[in-house]
Image (cartoon, rainbow, N blue to C red; front, side, top):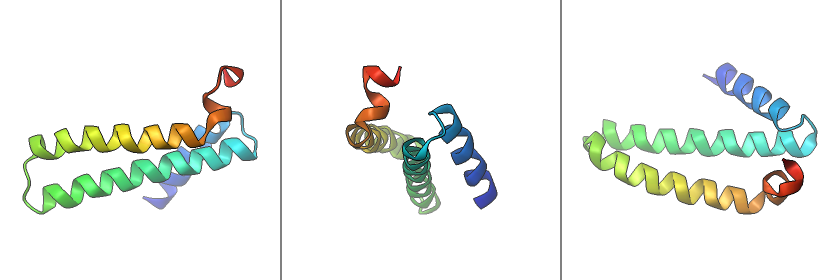
Length: 81
């Protein structure tokens, strides 16, 4: 699992430009994905329905990635395009 995450992070960093800012952003993005996935797994394993978890997961992902986007203005601005 760690090796997969490391490869995903490296590929994302390369796609974002490969510099230090890109590597830092990729690490944050992969961390958010991991935390959200673990929360979903925890809830489903605890007996909650997939439908209920999905509804909350969408809201949590929008919130988490919105906060991440606000913290990465260089990579989300028109200059990065």
